[in-house]
Structure formats: structure tokens, C-alpha cells
Image (tube, rainbow, N blue to C red; front, top):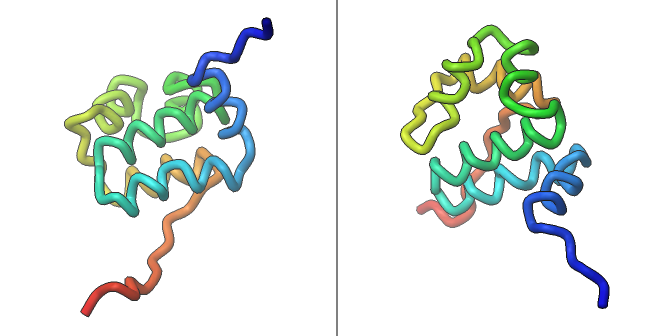
Length: 101
């Protein structure tokens, strides 16, 4: 009987792809869940750079600041978030909300 891969391992493999890396945190944003969005960014950092330590090397905030920023209670500033996304090969975008009145 073939063994299945652990979920996290499969997730990180899929997030190595740029379009999957963008879709993962976007799905959380669509649900309006900031905690899940930040978790998605942590997953992308693990997949694309090898973790928060490597992300800290590529951005201005130090490792401890990044852990706080991406924690469940994190509330990153727009400038910090933009730098973080750039280091992950992602960018911010704004689109029309067709459901809004």
C-alpha cells in the first residue's frame, strides 16, 4: 500500500510554483481572514525561500520582527508587507469588488 505525503510537505511543494504561491494567500484574503492570510505567507516563505530566517535575509525586518508580523496577532504595515511580498516574488494588487453595492 502506497503511503501518502504529509499535507504540509505537499503544500510546500505546490507553493514552489509562482501562481500557486500567489493563490494561497489570496484565497485567505477572499475569506477575509487575516490570520489565515499571514499563515499563507509563512507557508510561501517556507516553500520559496526556506523559511523566515531566509526571508529576513532578503528583507529589512529582522527574523524576530518577521515572526511577530506573520503571527496570529500580526498586523503588518503596508510598507513592510510590500517588501515581504516582493522578497517572495509576489505583489499587492487591488481589484473591483463586484459584490459591493
